[in-house]
Structure formats: C-alpha cells, structure tokens
Length: 117
Image (cartoon, rainbow, N blue to C red; front, side, top):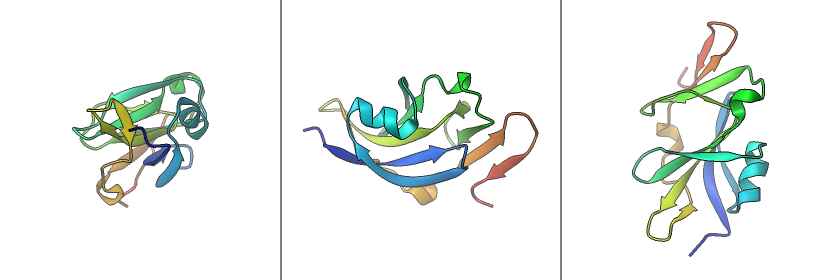
C-alpha cells in the first residue's frame, strides 16, 4: 500500500547539506522538494533509490555531488527513498543518514568539501 508521506534523505548541493525530510509521496511532492519539473531514478542499493532532478545540469548550479559507493556525479537536489519492490512504490528510506558519505564539488574551481570533515 502506498504511503501518503515518506521520509527520505535530501541532498542539497547548493547549501552543501544532507538532512532527513518528510514529504508527500506523489509526483508533485518530489517536484516541490527538489525544485524541479522532471525527475529520474538511480538505483542506489538493494533497498533505496536516489531520485534526482533530471534537468539539474542545465540549471547553472555551481555545486555538484557524489556519494561514496555510487558511480557518477549529480547536479541539483536529490532525495534518497526506500523501494517497495512488491508494490512497485517508494517508501521511507532504508539507510542510516550518518553512514551516508556525500562529497560536494564546486564546478568552477578545484575546491571540495567533504561532509566527514
């Protein structure tokens, strides 16, 4: 059964922060949370997906991010949510926020900020 609201982990590269959020589990809820009009999913692990702004690269963000254990770099906000494969729905994230290692990169310089510092 689809959860009306879910808890996820928001990654906001512009603020260089990672935090838990609760939001409506409907398409418009993802659009509002990520400040976007189009989303895409990236399989994160066996229990979670990374939902990204599919047009983030085209919006002129100065900061991008990567997640330890996941290939690639991402631009724009993203949220990690759990996956209910039986129902084919997203649900509360099944990951410990403290064990998530996100690294932020400035696009125009070589500066980096690691959330573990």
